[in-house]
Image (cartoon, rainbow, N blue to C red; front, side, top):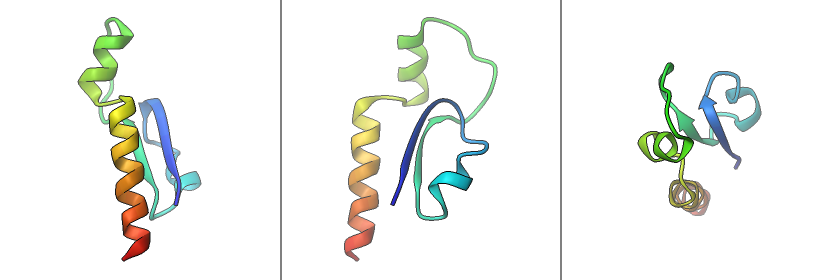
Length: 62
């Protein structure tokens, strides 16, 4: 299980994280502003990473 965190789009990460991996990052293109605002808007937060990692680990237990 792999989780990628990128302050950009997912394109290309599939190769590294595989079918069972997770991704925290942008789902669209073209936003600008202070990085703190953008990270919150796109859900690129420590909590999002922790939640995704927990969810992926739970999948392994099933």
